[in-house]
Length: 302
Image (cartoon, rainbow, N blue to C red; front, side, top):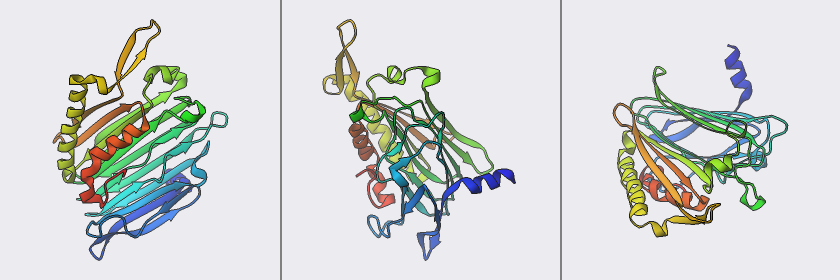
């Protein structure tokens, strides 16, 4: 009972999507400071049955010590898209305060939830913890894009935050773990983050799950293999050339990507990306996720 009461006090937003008159509709929407939801009446073709939700933070970002919990429920056969209008800025920490953002979602049978935000950008000394927990059925469909930039380049900040931790967990009905993933960048434990990632300024994960997304999974796998094959066969245009301390030129791919299939029935595709520019990742996402237009009404990141 205590945990439920704590969740209620911490809860900043919740949305429930159900079928109304044969179409996906928001039947419940709640938000309070520092979170706000914008739900456009129409996004893309009217022939596409999808609800789009834009999540905003008052003040343009997450303030040190913010504790945010949002809950979403997507009913059977419904489609919901959660996105943002710009990067999520995490401001400098005050003392050792850690900003925390938790998303909990239930995705019904034959339903689709797409989480396609702009990247997280942590300011110098920021401490940020993000956890996303998804409860799905055997034929639910899920798209997750989770990505972070190195910081405010114009201010000379590159991987200058103190902590970034992002957790994505997916559970089947009954609590059976389907996918458990954590990325942790903590200055106190690994030292200089910039030395670890070197010239790469963006790290991203894309996850595709479910029968509705099988055709997208197949296309993305082929494209990712093609990108890396092209870099290996014709490296000059895809590599960044820099001198090391000894004066020798070292060549690195400006964008590296890989993909893996998970699950007993190979129902989950996970794509990892590391890139030297944010623009190149936006372009990558545009190209790889373009086939989702038929399900979401418009292509993501355009």
